[in-house]
Length: 369
Image (tube, rainbow, N blue to C red):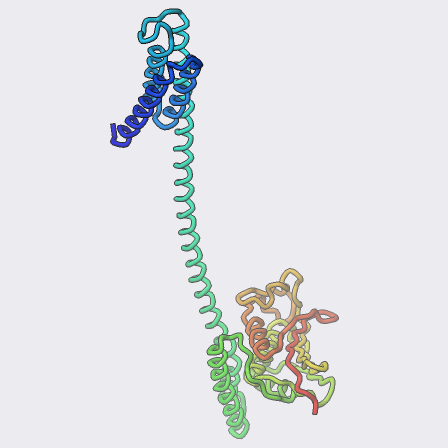
């Protein structure tokens, strides 16, 4: 028997001794009955059963019966049974003690089971939290890897146009004279350096900060973008329409060229070879709109929510459509929107009347003088 059990028995035996002594003193009082002693000892048995288990409970039952029989049941101070009711008294104590011990034993077992289940739930919760932390770490690592791939794809995507132009200008078979090619090479190299510098500034400012903007003629922006995208356009017909003269935008030249270059490349990829690409310059009171429109397959309603999400595919073009090249990883549109929003603008899509797609680059309009 452990020390705690010995201490528990000692406490309840002491309680029994105190109760017995008090009842013995009270046994001489005229109003004291056997029922009073029985009730007192039943309370003692209940309390002992609750803490001590069956052995202590039955021990307290036996001792309580002996005390009641010795002090209260005539003939007093003897254990000899005077009547058959003495046996009933003992049986009542025994049955009561046994039922109480069983009741409390079941209660203790249920309590232990509940505690074990609580500990198990806590353990499983801790394991679940650990698994969630590990899953979160894995998601962060996957996202970091995805962003790394997106950045690499972005650089590859946006450097393709100037590199293609430089390659075309330096190709002897293209037929460009030095007087024509060298200024264009210088222009493209300068623009490429400005693009890299802008990207560094853009990344240093967190990619979401607003950039310092300059004023530029909107129609001039379009023609500069067309010259820079000459290799991508590869002789495709592009019609430029300016709705009103003197439209001036506030923008970052390098990023605007990248956005327009991406939109033109997107139109080339999806428009039929024999259909022109239309570029429209228009404005509202506060916004300049540069619209690149094509007669390609457009965008299905189910794809609209993912159109500007990085690394999402546009739907494949049906076989038989001229110029179709199928679905592609959608980095260009995501990059275009990011760069436009960094200039306090945006890139939005709308279906073109008569079929096709229109992508509108919106920029702040410079105040009219």
